[in-house]
Image 1 (cartoon, helix red, strand yellow):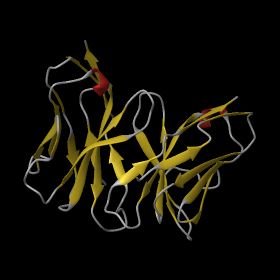
Image 2 (cartoon, rainbow over the protein chains, first blue to last red; image 1 turned 90 degrees about the vertical axis):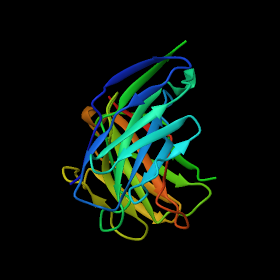
Image 3 (cartoon, chains in turn purple, blue; image 1 turned 180 degrees about the vertical axis):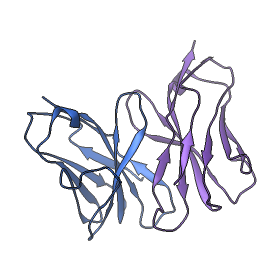
Length: 117
Length: 116
């Protein structure tokens, strides 16, 4: 079974600053996907960024980028130029590619990020 | 595109009654939908995987007779909480995978269930 660990229950950052959210995972799989989801106060889950494990290049989406260290099983999210709208709970998630568990997401505990003006 | 809706968004019911929650993919077909449960400020816990035309697959510890899942079409899955009790009060979220898409899941807005 896979596990995903987010060791930072809460984080805060000043507007326009940069913040990094940590995520580690444990798996014996070699082919998988990793995700960061954002859940604002509306509770709607929003995909922030995704990474295929077979890709060495770190994914980026505008102000969001990841540091994917496959050997260390680490997948951190960096938010640059933080905005007030980034305030939300962030979840790291793992999905195995293929097999009977294909499509199932395993979520970390979440990190509440607050952006201060 | 890729919109998933849930109905109702909020429901309050009396203990012992049953409640049905609908999850619809509005602009795509979904052979697989997932149902999650989330307690306040906690993570999403997968309850079951719903497959169109077949029985749902429940995660360990989830009572299949209490949480009935039906996936009768490629755009609709329902979760029925039978004989609801206060401990069933929670936020229920569904997600769906596009039959024609890749591995990405699209999430519904969730349903807040309160059992009195």
